[in-house]
Amino acid sequence: MQDLRGLACFVCLWLPQLQTEAPPSVDPEQVHLSYPGDPSSMTVTWTTFGQADSLVEFGPDPPGAFTLWARGRATKFVDGGKQHRTMYIHRVVLTGLLSGRRYAYRCGSPGSWSRPFSFQALGGGSDWSPRFAVFGDMGQQNPQSLPRLRHDTEMGLYDLILHVGDFAYDLDTDNALVGDEFMRKIEPVAALVPYMTCPGNHEQRFNFSNYRARFSMPGGTEGLWYSWDVGPAHIVSFSTEVYFYLEYGQQLVEEQFAWLVEDLQAANRPERRKERPWIVTMGHRPMYCSNNDRDDCTRHESIIRRGLDPHRYGLEDLFYKYGVDLELWAHEHSYERLWPVYDYKVYNGSTEAPYTNPGAPVHIITGSAGCRERLDPFVPEPRGWSAVRIEDYGYARLQIVNRTHLWLEQVSDDQNGTVVDGLWLIKERLGLPAWL
Image 1 (cartoon, rainbow, N blue to C red):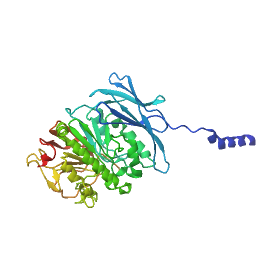
Image 2 (cartoon, rainbow, N blue to C red):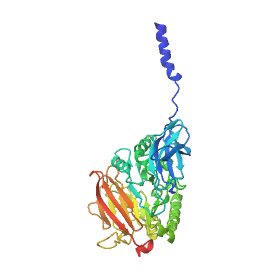
Image 3 (cartoon, helix red, strand yellow):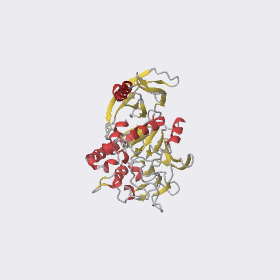
Image 4 (spheres, rainbow, N blue to C red):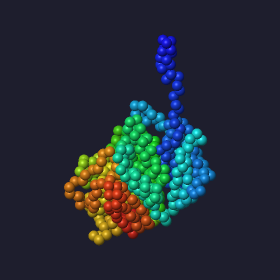
């Protein structure tokens, strides 16, 4: 009996050593799309925790047969947390897509494929009306608007998503496990339409490394700033965060500002502005707001508006100079629509139609998609440049209807999808002459 007990103890002590550790999973997850700027292309991104090939099989849907395939590459990413978790970010660019055609696809490797998804290739040229969902500040906890956004996406209401900074709260939390869970949660939306992003303050840890690794935006700056054309619009995404985390180098502020000047100059060439008259920017921290907190936008000389001391690299003068029409912001967990404003002065088109041929850019803050920090209140009295303020959960819908008309509305998730605000922005003049 003692011999049997001794044998049992020996087995218990050594059995864990005899068992082989399971290899890291190569099952594809966290699938999402992004638009590389070419209407005949689409980028598919996903994550595995073990090394695997980067393949996408795709074909027209219906019938959904995977008659085509594309190969990409995987990048090893090691999170900066204590565990230094390793994952592999796979990127494959699909090419040769036909404008407006729906495609089915799956991604992975011969050892493990994702479930099938589908998407519609974006329109080519400028004679079509792209539709966007626009929001910021959506976390892994309390992502209240996400089920409604998923329903809208499945109903085909959007061509692209614009997530204006702050993801998961935070992508790096708990050794990036929170980031993994957030990316899984948005997959039912992000795997169906291009999910375009800009960095927010919650992405700054480890030099924005989780943000840079996980998303695949156009250009060579790993999503910190980039632009693309879609329909009759030129969309510019940039980082407000380079102004606030100077430990990563003021050089980033200078590089981004120089890039913005060059990009906006190019977008204002007469032939380009005629083809794509709308210029829309997206950046996380607004330059104006009337919230009851101490954020940068509550200061008269906000850094985003006026730049670093002594007034270097300010964005308000730059965007005004190059005739930016619509500026999309988040960061404040609320919705606020401004009158057309420049340097704190309101430049409405007219009393009856303030957004018809306005004399300054229009600002929209929509940062209440839902996160653990809940909503942000407003100061009791609105500022003179503040047109509408709404403190509830929701998101915006934007449609660039044609070369002269743009529609934006705010959807309240608290009010069961009710549209609680809307405006027609109508412009018959282009660029800086529109302000004169």
